[in-house]
Amino acid sequence: AKVQALKAGYDEAILLSPQGHVSECSGENIFAVIDGTIITPPSSAGALEGITQSAVRRIAEDLGFDYVQGNILRSDLYTADEAFLSGTAAEVVPIRSVDDREIGDPGPLTRAIQEVPHATVSARVRRHSHGGCDDPRQGWRGIGHGHLSPSQGRRLRSRPVARDPGADSLQQT
Image (cartoon, rainbow, N blue to C red; front, side, top):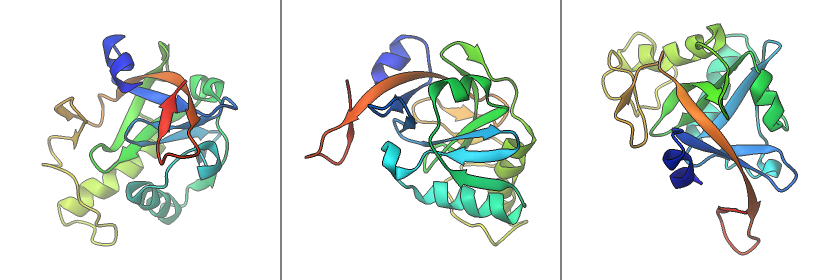
């Protein structure tokens, strides 16, 4: 899915469950901000739980943001107020568009969540240390994309996937 997304001019692929729910990206967890609530897919949608995902949850809760795990449809991403990815290599990166539908510039919740790891790395905040950032002034490291500044974001393409009961990974359908 990732290779097909790159060939089609996208930065990442969004994996969908057989039921059509957003699961995750090829190497990151995905989050949508809808009506002021941060929503991330549950493991029942095929999402693997991540360390950075847990850090995002804690940061969101510490900042007083509503955070839930819930099913997300592809169309929810098209109309989301904000959306972003988190992962060990990507840290927190805004999503600028999905399937050529613009989400727009990173919003206030995405920026606030991005700021905590930046501040942690630069020793301004010690509570949320989970590392993974090069120079916080340069932006977060993107998988195969060099440095992505927090304002750049990514263009994504969604793809259906099915879970193979005998495997630990998702496979494209």
